[in-house]
Image 1 (cartoon, one colour):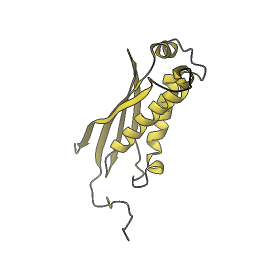
Image 2: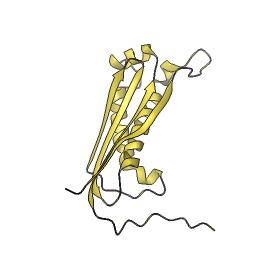
Image 3: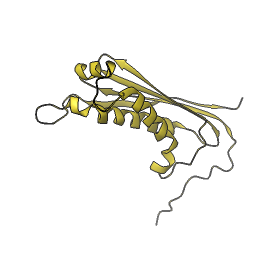
Image 4: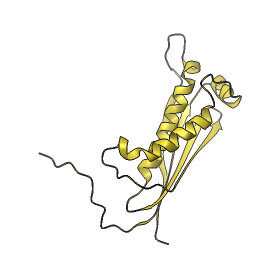
Length: 148
């Protein structure tokens, strides 16, 4: 039987860790305009997605079974409106023994899913499908480990 366990990080030094992750959601131009004008029925899409991303980063260890609970010191979720969708960029920092890239990826992913949830009414076609809507390009942009 395969042993299932978290990695032992007790021997690692506590240092500043930072990770930045980003992702993109493609949306209809009409939907983007509704977001900009705050006409989305469910509320302020950008503010809600930011809060959802921050909350998600703090709960990463509850969602991903092999992630350590990390005392996060900084979480920032930025959302940029672009021509064909919204870009989410999440930054996470902590002084700890392991990196925070999973927390940054989780923040980005949940912020993107929150956007989709809030605008899905406007993205559906006549058959109730989402022919244009797409989440893509989720990646770690930067990972830093600083001893100074």
